[in-house]
Image (cartoon, rainbow, N blue to C red; front, side, top):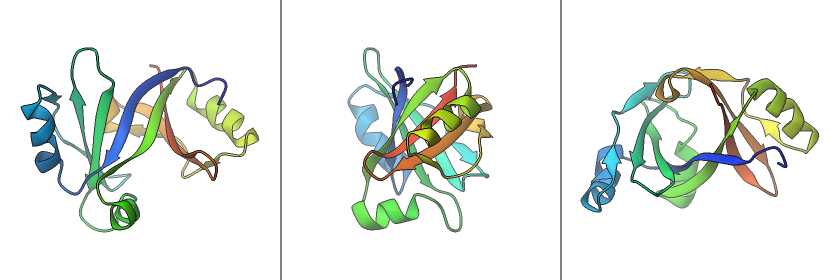
Length: 134
């Protein structure tokens, strides 16, 4: 993880983006549009507020979703930190050498302006996401 220097956002698993976002919006946060990530079977939106780290809200899309288990086991909760990297594939290889396992090969993300992303897991760290800088 020594090459992960910049946090892009913190991801929260939620059941309903609009219901969770309403609490943040009431506190001065701004909600982005809601994106359907067909490949990941999720809906995604971002909450922003000046001076604060961006929050990503991730809820299940129709059918089975990767966030189902998180919601079932933990309820609404933060579950990953996303880091910006120069090269996603190189970061996947470096993190693999450190014991991280990719959950899938890098894919473009609609919610992230089609930048490549990849989720990875380590039993002593949990889930992280990496996203291409450009």
